[in-house]
Amino acid sequence: MNTIEIPFRGETLCALGSGALFWPARDLLIVSDLHLGKSERIARRRGTMLPPYETRATLERLEADLAATSAGGVLCLGDSFDDLDAARSLDPEDRAHLLSLIEPRVWHWVEGNHDPGPAGLPGEHHAELTLGPLTFRHIAEPGASGELSGHYHPKLGLPGCGGTRPCLLFDAARMILPAYGAYTGGMPATAPELRALIGSPAFAVLTGAKPLLVPYPARGAGRGRRRF
Image (cartoon, rainbow, N blue to C red; front, side):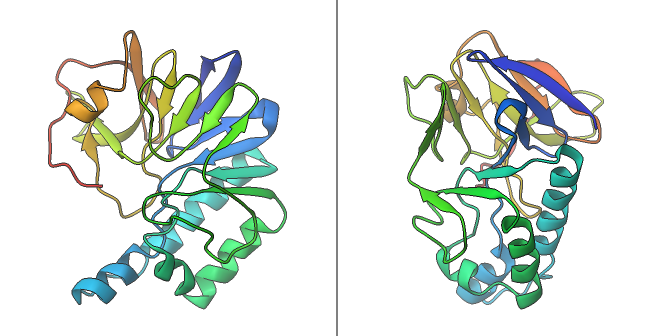
């Protein structure tokens, strides 16, 4: 398993190429912005029919990360579902797959702006959660310390890397995770909203088969439309 070890607030967190983090000391896999059921939500609200495979692809990725890490717990950092109706309308096969991942483990759901409440699934539900020196919430708070969040779907492009990739951003005080879902847009890591949150020195971990650690902001950082 290709990972990058990151010392953070006295702990060691391992960045996976999928965009997940593994916290070995807590036996905990951390993911953000799965946006399960996004194609169903788009069809319901806009009438646009998309192939309904993104939930399956995301769950398969999650299952692979759980197998690779043998994690006994999972923490989802919000926007796990594209909205609460999407959570209730999961395809029966996808719901059964998700339940098979939840049931053997300690599972934490942190609320997001897309899913601001319990989704009717097993697990512990939190507005935010503090474990040891780390605090987990969906949207970063200015001035926070020891914080892990999601929401912004950061992405970064480097010369020779084949376009932009979702990326983890971190400095001494906070980490902002990439979107884990298979069908999600992204915000350039150089966007003002992210520059305002990330201090210096700081780094990015680009996702991929082999995660790549680079300085932030990187020269040649990708630009693109804001979508999250």
